[in-house]
Structures are given as structure tokens and as C-alpha cells.
Length: 135
Image 1 (tube, one colour):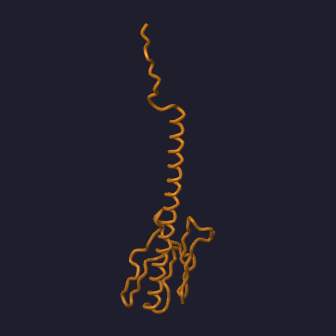
Image 2 (image 1 turned 30 degrees about the vertical axis):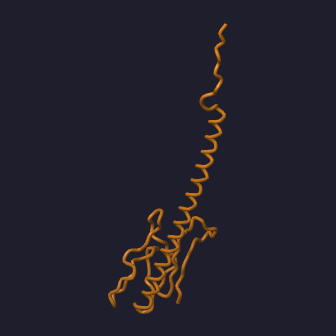
Image 3 (image 1 turned 60 degrees about the vertical axis):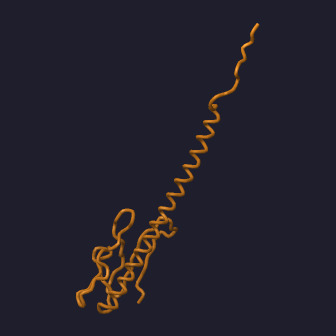
């Protein structure tokens, strides 16, 4: 009698192996997306701080050149900064928030002082990040 040799070599992956691989891939993707989201938030916060510093520098230049007073905003937002005598524009386009494009807040405004603010995503401060006049 002739015996037929049965080949017991397994071809392919078992269901358990596939589930383990899928679980590992999903964990890696989750960690990567959380890290990417955090990096984006920190980048936008850094941009907000940089924008406020640019606005502050323009306000201080305005103060020095345009008669020792600061520009006033009636809208509550940072205005375009320039003076008529001498004809100088210090901030022709006002920087806006990197996420929504809304202008930065200027809650306190008078010709003798200013305060410009933005809310930071990664900050613990409920009032946000604010800069005031240096004079």
C-alpha cells in the first residue's frame, strides 16, 4: 500500500496573529496622532506669542515717533498702526490668530497705555497671554 504524505505546513497567518498586528498598528497610530496634535498646538501658541511681540514693537515705535501716545482702538481689537505726522506705517497688516484668523484682543486701550491679549491652548492661565506697554 502506498502512503500519501500529508503536508502539514501552515500557509498564512492565524486570526490571533492578525489581531495582534492590528492592535499594535492602532496603538502606534494613536500615539503618533496625539503627538502631532500637541506639536500643532504648541506651534500655534508660539506663533501667537510672536505676533503679540510684533504688535508690541509696533506700538512702542508708534509711541516714540508719533508724539508719545499709543494708538487707541474703539473696536476692542488691535488696529492698523501708523501716524500721519510724520507719515509712517509701523504695522500695515495686523497679524491674526493662526487658527481662526480672528484679530488679537485689545481689552484696555488709551493713549497712555495698552494691553494686547491672546488665549493660548497649552497654557494654564485662564486670562491668556497678554503684553502691556513698556513705558
